[in-house]
Image 1 (cartoon, rainbow, N blue to C red):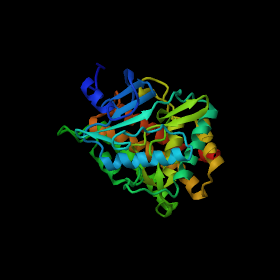
Image 2: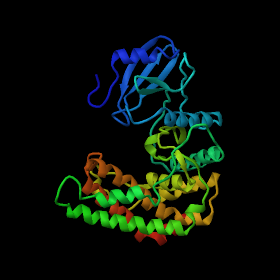
Image 3: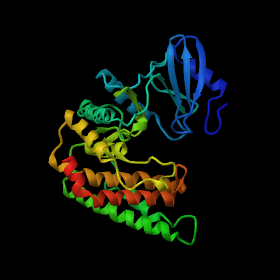
Image 4: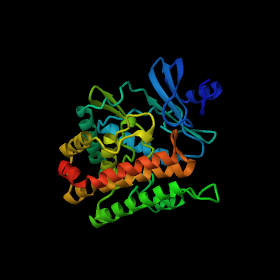
Length: 341
């Protein structure tokens, strides 16, 4: 039995796999990756190698998962690099529901993680542009989530609660960091709105385009993973988040020790890859730095408010680091703008 987190019982595994026509099972192995509450098993059978995933109970619903699957099936038909979903043999569905759980079975993709090279960074940018092109006019019967990290009342509400929870005495250090992050977030939101955000077209975006959700074969992207955050929003939000995720420098075990700066070379390589496939209006390009500040703050504050931590880091140390990186972007606008525009 795997240590920690959720897992499959042998009875559950046998019951779930009985719904798929994948031949005789030769081997099953727990895969420790991603959300510990969503157990994964590598299944080797007479018909190949597969990945079985169980969703956290109560987190997802049928419509949300079905929407993500519809997007993946559409992309696969366009020869975009996604993992192939396996249909059940009894209901011919990619979504299996048993005892209030949802299960997914994928063909296993062999690949390596992002190697940090300029070629792989550009490739990630190019494939994001291709992703957007393939989904620009796509519609499906399932209702997708809408919205983004930009100008979010939820982000502001969480920033206001930092330092005030679980105690009658507020944490002054957290309050000070929250005030600074709020000022940075608000200033960037205003700038992006003035550039015309509300008038920009919306489409399906990935919502979580970062190196951990990709597999490569050499410098070629061979699989995009995890469509749980797919939603409808302006495509520029995906681009800004991707530029941040591929350029953020976090090469030390403790995030409190991460440097302020971003990797400017990777930032421009990712954008250049995107622009090789899809062009952007100047107003959108002008919004990228502020959207990067917004997404960095939004992604950090939500889990800290919920748990007091970000991963293994205390909320205070992690948000202090986020503040330093957001200030670095703000203080280096001219240099970064000249590099990316």
